[in-house]
Image 1 (cartoon, rainbow, N blue to C red):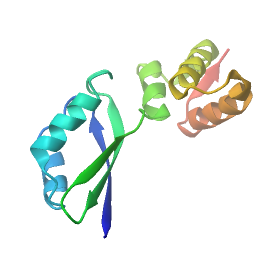
Image 2: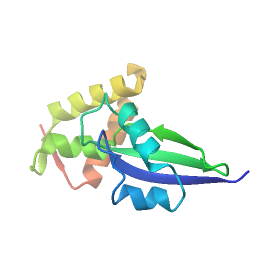
Image 3: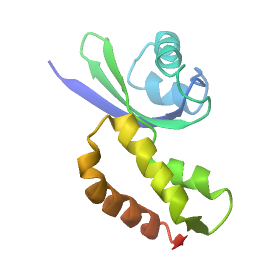
Image 4: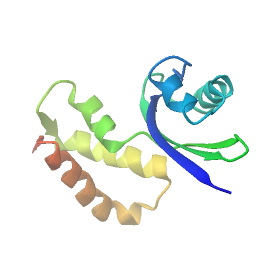
Length: 130
């Protein structure tokens, strides 16, 4: 049995059968109406319009498995920035606490997670101010 994997970003709660989603799913013969209903149901707990990564595994018998992942850190950082190029260290700490609660991880990994977060922020050419 062959499996086709489709990776795509879709705005939470806003899946529709039209472009750009419809043509992507249509070429793999995924039932678009059922997919949109299932996706919108799975993302009703998220803020509408937040882009979330989605993995769709499509099987030979035209069934599929939908996996909705968590919003990206880049999106969260951009939301905190609000059109600025500097980010207060307190906001970075708040984002770190949010990431720990979303991912349900131990606070013990906070130093390692903070290094990763600072790396992501610096790769986005954002300055962190004290």
